[in-house]
Image (tube, rainbow, N blue to C red; front, side):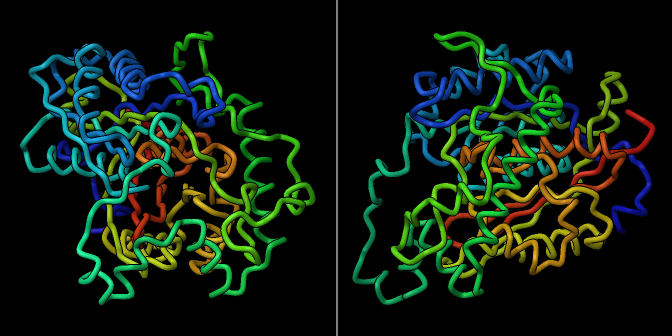
Length: 395
């Protein structure tokens, strides 16, 4: 049955909170000295406070993360406990690269749907200050075996080079990418000035004070300014620091339960979770992932692209985001209306959950119904999820 015609059921999986920290530039921003666990702790506390759910009632937590060392898992468990969710609640992590935060929500939604748990939190987290990508050790592999497959070896191509490969493969022009990037900043600056991010942000206490605003937005950026930047990945490429996502620190958390449980507790429903799909693409052009994952999740939920009122598509690079929008024939007025990762930043493991926190309020402001969150995924994948905001009723 299509999500569009499906009647409400007490078994529906619903979102009752979707919050995030500010997104702050890595290394040079206010979160550079803030432990990743503190970001998670803050957003968990904020979600519990917003809903009034006792921490003891949370059955399980899944945290999406890409860069935290394996031993860092213990710090997340500690953050959970200090946030007021006791040791009787379990926690685990998941890494599906840039879609990790969205994957974590899907895992919790499926656990609720199967009856394993009643209430859970899907979260996402990344401190790219403390765990920079360029400091990661290469995992040992059997190179003699792996080199037998060109596709397998393509999994090692740096993401920026895959962006320039998309540019070359599909004939994208540099000025189009710079215009796209400048527009991301313009939209984000306008949204920030209008206070549109305020309801989704949980302020974070840092040694230098309270941080409650994203700091990567450049309100005066223009395509002309961006055109002066040099390529950073290949000498003749079109991908620059200005038309790529920013490396960023941040966390987000989403609380899910059934509609029946939300009714019983009298908690307003922020959105309905309808489904999540992933799809694989060639690793050398990994950025095209949304163009494959979005049709897949539309088919899964019985919707068409015209049923979607807002698309939040992660802007890993202007190249891949712009190509996906064009390839799918999307109405650009529906895509990233508040700007995207080029302006706001892309804390890898956090992004999927962050997109949900941004998507739901914007659907309500537009009096829209269905929204999609989607992104490309390192090593060649795409991911996409469909959520719904129900008109004129919170329960």
